[in-house]
View 1 (cartoon, helix red, strand yellow):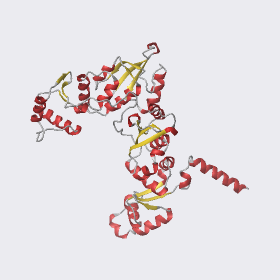
View 2 (cartoon, rainbow, N blue to C red):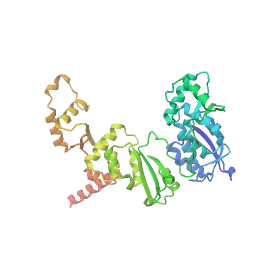
View 3 (cartoon, rainbow, N blue to C red):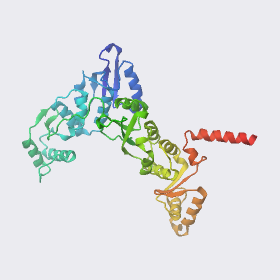
View 4 (spheres, rainbow, N blue to C red):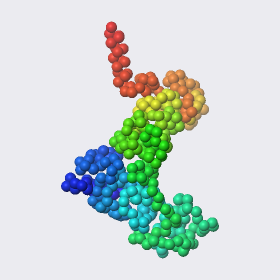
Length: 400
């Protein structure tokens, strides 16, 4: 999205750190260390002097050159703008000039409301202008005149009905948009849902009732990001934190077990890191396995997720016949011949499989486990180590 050259305003001789925003997750800790090397990169303080900004898509950000900013503010803004399409970026650029904004806090607030305005950059195409304006009003909830037509008439009504403000990006029509403060200079506001987000939370200090002082967190993330979020929220330790659940990509079976509001933030993050490459069918399978295994906490679920390949799952199979039909027709383990369908005994095969594996039917289908450890042992911390210790103990007992 953009690159910024950051310096220590009090000691420019310490050098310049060039950062690409939004910061790639794998480079975040390295970036903080580099900024610490020039005595910058604080959690809350705006201690980075923006010496230069390079961007092709959002020239309005150049208005930040010569100002002070916090690295997490710039990172938040980069992520927000990266989610914008071309017209949304045009709206942001034009609005920044229209309202003469030049601080990162103002830019953060603007990014949450700039999509409410209409920008006309080509008055020769009023048909598309009208359609775009109509969509803007629909998506932002701004009331439109009853019976309004979509197209040239809508554009003409817009031009005649409110003053336009000329910018280098086009003429801006505010549509009643008000620039409201959402960012208080410490607690970064909630915004986009990242593609890799599995759990969305708000964290605050124990006993805090002002929701504006909670910090918005998406998991998985790096440990250093979690620690910095805790500091911004004024949380001195994990034991003095309250967690509010906002959303999840996990199945209901997993969400009910997690007990997010009383669990460990860092254990939840570890679970999300393990599941970060899951496909939709993996989340469904994990939910079914959890219903069978009955884990008690996020750490138990993490162990199940790490060993999901040790479980078999037949989705939507709730009877022995449905199980046999899935295994023979859909599992890919057998070469199914449609001409012999009347000769397959699905029910007997399903019963035999259940007896052999000790599996069970749950809400989402049939589940079985075929690992060396019991499920209870598997869900312990470091189950392989525990298994090895038990085997060594058994061998010593046999030697006696």
